[in-house]
Image 1: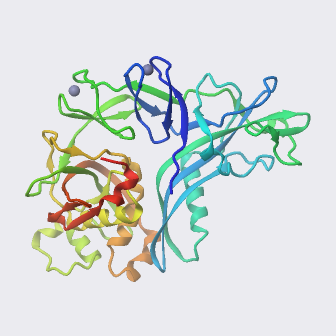
Image 2: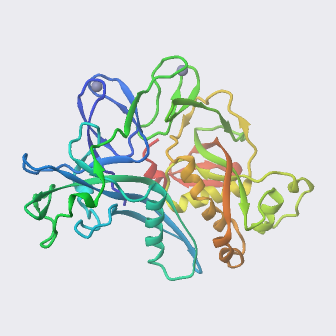
Image 3: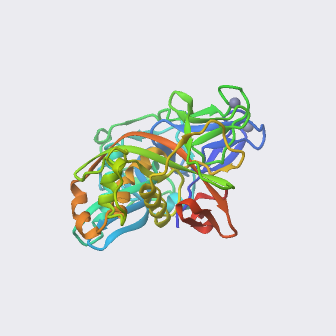
Length: 410
Ligand SMILES: [Zn+2]
Ligand SMILES: [Zn+2]
């Protein structure tokens, strides 16, 4: 089961203390009531709390930490496994290869320019770190592996404090020697410096009308119910996003967000609806206009258990529902967008794997397939709420409410 890191935080407005979870984005201060939206510049950076003696200079050792689902496809079809792992981001045997369980047991702090100490430079970038975790996971499965990808919930850097006493290195969390033979590396071995500025808080106010924006604490899209607009936080600030809906007959209780992605697929013909019908071996007679109907991938825009992610993505992708621009926000609940489009794009090859029939014919070809996203749109699909399920009769979809448990409560 996933464990959310907990982070000690102070309200950027009034300084009141708060404890955040790592997925938190929209934070409303319990004291001054001001809402702000948290925006890491690239990856979130945290430090483990230290108990080092005051006269020691701290060095912070970076660890990449990945939490998410790794999908693989081999001779036995598509498999998935949840991963919550860390590995040292500098190459030096003096430092432990992973953080172990410490990051889960302790309350972390954000790295801010005020955090004192020397921060060692991590080797590689986010892409390389993610590739490492994916490879490591796939290496635990018997070959052949035709496809390995991850749908990440988070990649972060966690810095562990160490300090030197004599020639020995000490763990600044436990205040104990790191390992009986851990010698301090010469200071010039690793580049490092003071903590950078990697975190921004922007006011959660509608740029159009100035009212408070709404959303669940982990949402990626903020709603203004006053002027009916949706906003996404980017490095340049809040940006309005235009969305679509899937018109369906009948009443709706809740709208679930999906990414509708147009992509160029190389290695397997998949540009039109007719290509999809052939790939999925649909038992219907192709219609004349299928060759000219453009194909789109569909994937959930919310965190959901891996098996449900695949069912939803497969059903919507096979249905290729028509969309209409969403002129006015529905009064019904909108499920929070919690899965960024980049993560949805990462899942597309797995979607391809569960759509293709027969699998034996297509799965070995997946290694050579490239999927290049061209454009994406957020589209809301109406569902009704039954006691235990969300239902979409038009798509013959029933999603057990417990399956959405990972996404929190509506
Ligand atoms: Zn406050
Ligand atoms: Zn507004």
